Image (cartoon, rainbow, N blue to C red; front, side, top):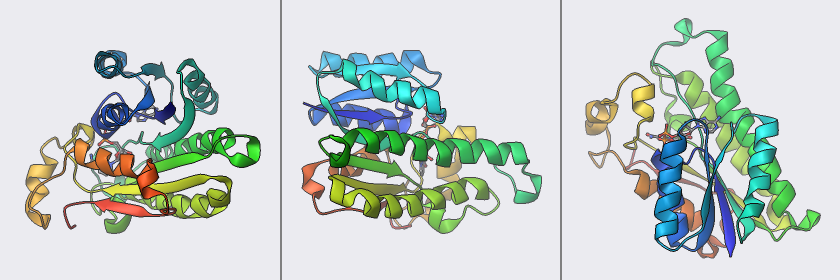
Length: 247
Ligand code: NAD
């Protein structure tokens, strides 16, 4: 059996990915930071469906907690073969002139340093060079990396631009060691992250600017993540799939 670790999997895209991964035969480590009950619900659903999963509390931007998260995967019957760098944050919409240095630090720590540290742990465990069995890493970026999110959160957009560069570079670094690194770039997806930005109705306001005239669902993003984590994408490395309704 194969094990997948997903950061920030108690809700949204991470939760949808956890459920689909279990349906695809993965044992799943459901990482959460604060929402234990929600993470437990995802685990219960997976177990009720005959799958394997555990919930592991850890701040996916803390070096020590990340190591503990990856060690916890040994509690599952499978071998770690997939990691999904999903956890990410944004903060209240504002212009750059209003942003504090503390906010920029929070965004870059959560969205860039954390994912790099997590991927480091995944590579250490999966690389053929270090006795691992190879595997896949999927980084969750954002269409914001292309559009820049002016007037809303250019800090967030910049952090996702960094993730895209990281996906390309790490993919080349570890491709010969049995690890395929790829990314997804969601557009407007219907999750609670928009409420964190101060506008729960953001997708409704902006949907007419989307060629498909609607936001996407977390399940639609999860499908692409699972494809990249599967053998069906066996020749994809450094690929970044847009899931943005044509935006
Ligand atoms: P969400 O807020 O529902 O889920 C993100 C989860 O990550 C939350 O549960 C949050 O608590 C968790 N998290 C954040 N920092 C963490 C940390 N340090 N450690 C552990 N968990 C942490 O949002 P979502 O829309 O499901 O977002 C998932 C990913 O998709 C994010 O990386 C986000 O930037 C990206 N994304 C979302 C959209 C969208 O429109 N929803 C668009 C593009 C990209």
